[in-house]
Length: 448
Figure 1 (cartoon, helix red, strand yellow):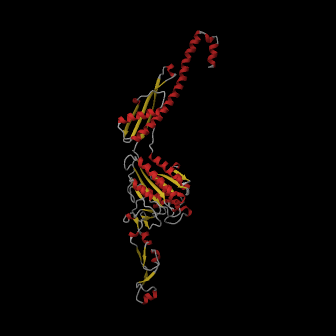
Figure 2 (cartoon, rainbow, N blue to C red):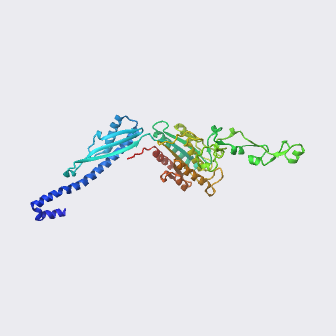
Figure 3 (cartoon, rainbow, N blue to C red):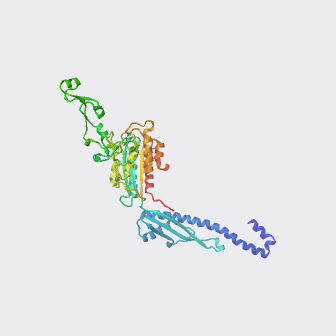
C-alpha cells in the first residue's frame, strides 16, 4: 500500500481526475484480491462438505437396505450433524442420494458459496459441491485360514493367543456379512501334513500306493514295509525258515509277500503331492496329481472346507492342538485348494467381480520337513515360494503372519503387498493383527 500512499499524498494524486482514476483502479484490484480470498474459503467449505458426505455414505451403507424416503431423511440428518458450520447455506434438497445399482449408493451435494469480497466485481455466489460413492454388501468374501499347528506353537502361549485371535476374526467376518453366505471361511490346520479326515476314504482324488506300501503285513516276521518285505525269502511251507530245510521238505523258497492293510485303518492325513503339483491347484486326475494318503504322524485337527456355519468354525478352532514339524507349503496349498471349485474341495463359488478371495497364512517357524525330507539348501522354502507365486498369479490375495520365529523374507515375499505382511514379536499381538486384517476385509471402500 506504500505506492498508493505516495500517490495520494502528491499534488497530482489530489487532483480530481487522478482521484477518480485511482478510485476506479481499486475496483479490479480489490476484486482480484477478494476472488483469491473467496476461493480459499470456498475450497475449505468444499473439503468440509466432502468429509461430511463421506461419513454420511459410510453410515448409510451400514444401515442398508433403506427405502428412498429413509435415505433422504436419515442421510440429511447424518450429513448435517457431520458438517458443522460453513459459509455455504444448505438445505435438505441440496443433498441427492441415488441407488444406481444393487449394493451401490451415490451421494451428491451442491450449494452456493456466498462471496465476501468478490461482490465488488459482481460475483455474489458460485457453486460448491462434493460427490461420494460407496458399496454396501455387494462384495462377498471367501477367506482361507492356513494356521500353523506345529509343536512349537505350544511355547510362549502362541496356540492360546492364536485361538483367541481366530475367534475374534470369525466374529468380525460374521458381522460383516449382510446375508447368510456373503462371507465364507475355511480352516486349514497344518504341520508336516494336513488332515482331510476319514470321511474321504473313497474319494477319487486320493492315491493309496504310498500308504499301502507302509501299512500292512509281511509273511516274514520283522519286516514292516513293502520294500523291506519283498526283498526277503520265505518257504511255501511256513514252518521251515531256511532255504535248505524248506527245499529238503518239498517246499519252495520264494519272495516274501506284502499284504496291504485294510484302508479303513487310515487315520485321515495326506502329504505333499508329487513335485511340482505340490505348489499348484491342478485337478487331481492322475497318480502324479492325486493326494497321497498317509497315516497321521502327529495329532492334528481336520481341515474345514468353506462354510458360513460359524459355530462349526469356532469349534474347529478350539480343536487345534500343537504337534509335529513344519511344512508351510502344504498349509498354503490346501488353503488355495479350499478356494477353488474343483476337487478336493468344491464348496467355493466361481470367480466373479463381486467376490474376493483371500488366504491368511500364519506360521511360527522355519520349514523343517516335507514328504521328501528336510529343508537342506532351502528345498522346502523353494516349494513354499513357488506355491506363493502361483497362488498370487491365480488371483488370490495373501496375508502372511510370522509369529516370533520363521523365515521373514520368505513370508514377506509371499504376501501380496508388503502391507499385508505382519511380523509378530509376541503372541499377545496376534489379536490386534487379526482384528486389523478382519477390519480390512470387512471395510467399505469409498471411490470419489
